Amino acid sequence: MPIYEYRCSNCRRRVDIFVQGFSPPTNPSCSKCGSKELSRIYSSFAVRRSKNDRGVYDEILSDSKLTSGLMRNDPRALAEWSRKMARATGEDVTPETEELLSRLDAGEDMNKVVEDFKPPELKGDTEIGGAEAE
Image 1 (cartoon, helix red, strand yellow):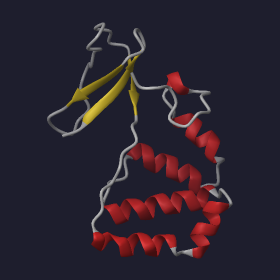
Image 2: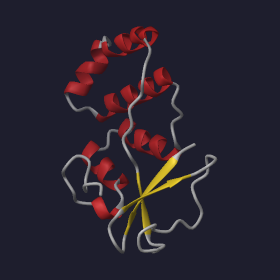
Image 3: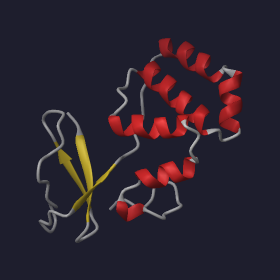
Image 4: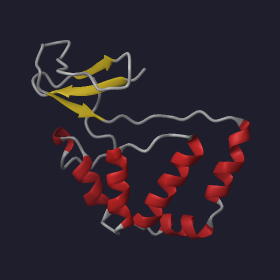
C-alpha cells in the first residue's frame, strides 16, 4: 500500500497520504490548511536485498563498459544502469521513469532531463534532494 507525498503550495508543508490500493488519491488536500493546491513529491527509497542478490549486483558493477560510461557521466550509461538495476530488484519502471530513461538513451544532458522532471517548487534548485521536508 503506497504512501503518496505532496508539497502544499499554500503552507509549504509536506503532506503524506496513505492509499489502500495502487492508484493515486483523487482530489488530495493538505491535512494542515485544507488547500487542494498540492504538488507531487517523488521520494527516494531504499531496496533491501538478500545475500543471494549479491551476484546480480556484482555482475552489473563488474561491467567495465557500463561503469566507464557512468564515470564519464554518459547519460546512455546511466539509462542502461537504471534499467539493469530495476530488473535486478524486480521493480516496475513507471511511464515517467521510462520517459526520463528514453531521453537519457537519446544522449540528452542529464542535468536538463532531471530539471525537467522536478516538481515546480524545486525547479532551479541545484542541491540534491531539493527543499527540506517538514
